Image (cartoon, rainbow, N blue to C red; front, top):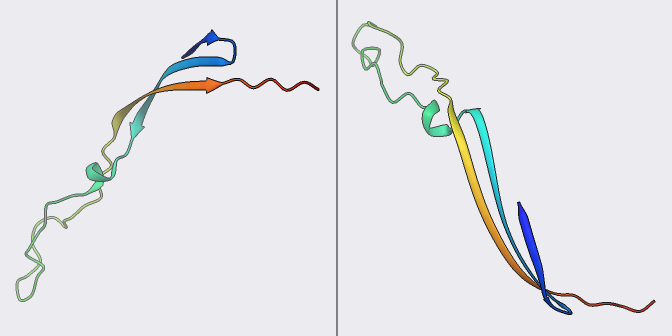
Length: 78
């Protein structure tokens, strides 16, 4: 969404706002399994589940941005 207004001849003010919604996003922090199985470390026998395991957590992302501008309009005679 963007709106602008010509204040005087040659001057224009503009403001804008944008949003982005994205579902099923895999973020790096949600992909790391922080649980370890210390039993395979020598000299112990391997017991229990193999860890860390791949984790495929997904989440939703909502990004928002705003912008404003003041511009000079220059007309050139051709």
